[in-house]
Image 1 (cartoon, one colour):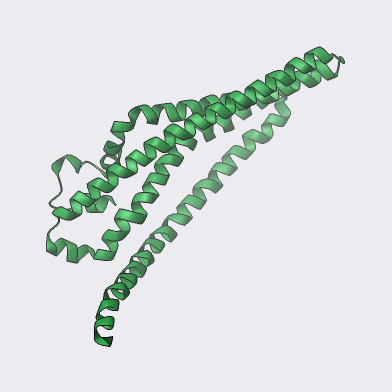
Image 2: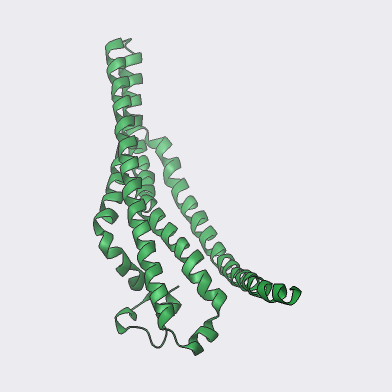
Length: 228
């Protein structure tokens, strides 16, 4: 998408790099971009407290047959679940609002940029490619922003927080977490590196499909005219 924004007649303010070109569209939604990850981290903290409450319920309540303590811990679990649900819904709302606003700004900028292109640039890029950029690619970027705001900070926080909590409970069992985290990270990054070329091939084929579909739709009127 940024290739379109970085053509030779592009605005000089957007020639510092693709990432900065896209991040500037998120500035009007700075508040939502901060509140979304904040509430996700709050939800993650509440989830990490659940095993500690369960451990206390087993070690103190069930072991000593203390029904009062068990009821208090059960009530605390319900409160943690309710607070986590509210935090999750709030985070989803702010993340979706920021991502939708970001997608709207990107599509407006792309449409304005396409309108300012010369006919030679339009022929060079291709109509099908421009349609892909302003529809599929814009939606993909919007989805990426939404997932980033919801999962970028939450996933590492959950992983390392769970490992720390495991060390506080049982050091030997926590070593399993310490050994599994690098393996999982390597698998995730390997899948990402493997899927990037596949995604580029999919985008190229999508351009061809859109081009063929557009030619069929344009040719339908000609065929109908000849038929009449």
